[in-house]
Each structure stands twice: as structure tokens, then as C-alpha cells.
Length: 355
Image (tube, rainbow, N blue to C red; front, side, top):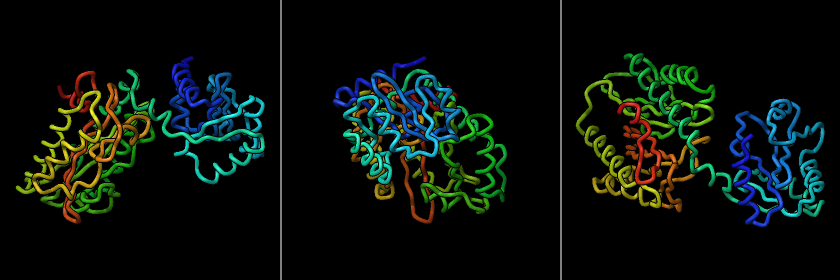
């Protein structure tokens, strides 16, 4: 039974002078306990024991995880039960995930814990900070998800035909990715023709493929819970000169920013390199989002590459690099790759399968 992540986490909360920690985010719970199941409940972590409190519908699945003691909350106030368990454990100061606990739950838990004279202390991104640096097995899972995603692009190229709709292609590639990887994708497939590509998170419609149409596809498989996220742009006919220039500009911005990646670099400095290349050609105001983001158990996680990011790149972080230009109601060009930060530079994960 692996306990290394829990041990590392306990050291973090010890530094904060916390007796225990209450986890509510299921992804963080699964990460710390190597448990890949969809559950709903609360995990109390202390140096003495781990207790998972959940409802009947999740109880039998939760019992499969031998790392924790599973408590069934049957027709009880789960917030009161959490407080009762903490009182039994003689906990005085407990931390919680401020970003993941909704206000109604926070108020109820705080009220119940106050009755037991337990201090409830908000923290930010303790587990997310651990998740940002990937272990060897995690990187292998991400690479497998990436390979499946690349196969998804090849599949679409094989089946695509004139008059096919965005929605049809999205549904077909979704089935393909689910057969090859996990049943749950990293996100719903984005297939956008022509002017629909100018919406970054476009929902596929019944829009049909016509001649001279730009095709933007953003897809991501999951493998063993780990995500991929790749975007490619295709043309049904010959690429118009203006779009070709923008495509080459975006490709250059991506290549130059990837070249600058290495441990110790500020994420916002990587973003700046791509943004300046695009801005110098007059397209800066049409690049409205960050250059990229971390990827793992979540499709968007630390670190974030944006102008305001305070994140620092470290070896074995995995990030996307996705410069883009969006011309409202006309078209967009976005090229997205996945990068592993190495000890001295960058590994382009989606290129490794073609080298």
C-alpha cells in the first residue's frame, strides 16, 4: 500500500500547525490515496488515521480503499458526524480546501466544529501543488492519453466528408476516444467549422462542412484518470493566404515559447514570449487567454502560463502550450501541444509518437 503522498501531505499540514485536514475534492482525495473511483464524501487526514465519511450509494466502493477507515453516514447530518469523529480524534485545529468547499457546506461544518471547540482553517492548493509535479507513472499515463488523442485526430481525418456536421464528428470521435481510453473524457470534444472556431469553447452544432472551411478540433482522451488536451487546425480546401500567415505566426509563437521552457523559469515569462511574437504582427488583442496550463487528473490545473501567473516551472511538470488568434465571428487559429518540463528543457509529448 502506497503511503508516500499521504506522508508528504502530513508534513505540509504539520508546518501549518494543523492537527488534521478535511478533504472534500474527490480528485485530491483520489490522488493522495491512489484510488481511482468516483466517490462523494469527506476524508479526514491525521497522523494517526484516515477516516472517509460517505453515504450508502458510495459506501461499498469506498470500503475497497484499505488506506482509510470508511464510515457510513446513514440518515445523519454528515457535518455533525465529521465534527463528532474529529472530537474523538482529539483534533483542535483542522484545515480545509478553501477553493473546493461551497459556502453552504462551509457554514454548516464551521457551525458543527465550533460546537466541539475545533478551529476550522482555510488553505489553498496544498494538494494541487503536489499534483503539479508528475511522477514517472503519471507521465506514462498522460503519454498514453496523448497517444490515444492523436489517434483520434487520425480517425477524424479518415472519416470526415463534405456535408458532415460538427455534432456528428464530435460524437464519432467521442466514441472512438472512449473505446481506446477511459469512459470519461478530459472534456467534451470541440469541433468547429469556419466562424464557429472563433468561440474558444464552442459547442458543436448541426453546422455542415462546406468548401473552403477551416476546421478546428480540440480533443482530449483520459487514460487511468489522466488527461490529454490537443488542438489542431485543418482546411477542407486550400488554405487562404491570410490564414496561412496567421497559422505560421501561431506556429512560430508556439515553437519559440517551447524553446524557452526549463526548470526555474517563470510561467508568465514563457507566456510573454509567445504573446510578444503575436503582438508584433498586430494580432495581440485577439489572443485573449493564457498561453497554457498544467494537465493531469484535471484538464486545467497548476501551473498556469498567463501574464499574471506567479507559478515557477519545475522538472516533470506537464503543461499545454496553445497560442491562438480569434477573429470574432470569422475564424480562429489555435495550435495546442503538451509539454513535459525536463531537467534542462522541454519534451514535446505529442511529437514523441512521430519521431
